Length: 397
Image 1 (cartoon, rainbow, N blue to C red):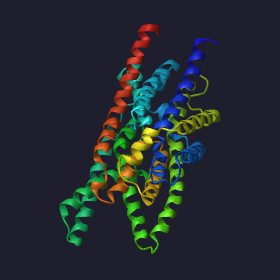
Image 2: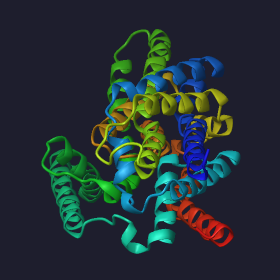
Image 3: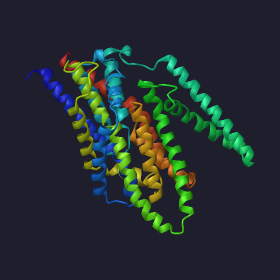
Image 4: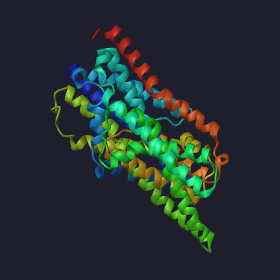
């Protein structure tokens, strides 16, 4: 067995180890609320989530894998060694954060690892930076969304004789967040690659918050009209299990594709499959199994942080947060955008908490998470870049 074959095998193993870490950190978010409300005991919740996550990649498309494998770094500079080092940077960052119970994005850690090794090996030109025209139109659409949202809410405030300034600010923020996803749904604007990833770092948690807020508000109104709130509470405990399963399945459809994209890139770089070839079935199966095993390992610190560290969760809120998270993740997967389950889950939990007032959310914990999100891509990029420089100095490749 030659050295190149060994590197290919090691690269595939590390990619699967990355998906395992992904399951241990990101996937833990999908069951945090169902455990917090005691709808399920932890071990049962983990088993159900792992099964649903395993099914995810077979239900959704493999568009996310193609974005990871071909849409961030020029495939022409890829070698199995380069991809191996990029993975090392991502795995080190995710596992360090998991050790301290900090929910971070494994998807964005992988993006950072690829960018870092790409810059170190091929320079600035090796990265597929956002297209200027697409960036300009993105800014225009976001601004237009903010303007329309502000005007609509100003009219609502005027008719309701309420504070116009507050309504305008809220409307502008909501309009800016919803603009791009709405245009994508209507097939009027296509955003892809690194720009989509960077944009949805901000949009996905905010979108999760908005969807969850309205979903929870609707559920609250339904509960207010019932004569038996205790029975409804038990019903939502059962429904929450379905919501958590849906969110886990959506996570499997998005996050499990991270390893698929890397393995695909390794196989292309090694000349085993063509650049325009299809993703082999065995890659899909192994990647799905790896992330499912990661869930089974139990990221308990992350589960505790998400389940109790943001807001107090009731069964109906847990159901709303899980369903909202599954909807947002499914939407992103349809368009091939690798997003963070952590970001989405945090947004949905915040959204359901805000329905009881802003004081119901522990904003200090949220700030800690946001800091980790902002640092993830540059930190993983720095680690993989340093690993490449050190490896080059030692082995001289």
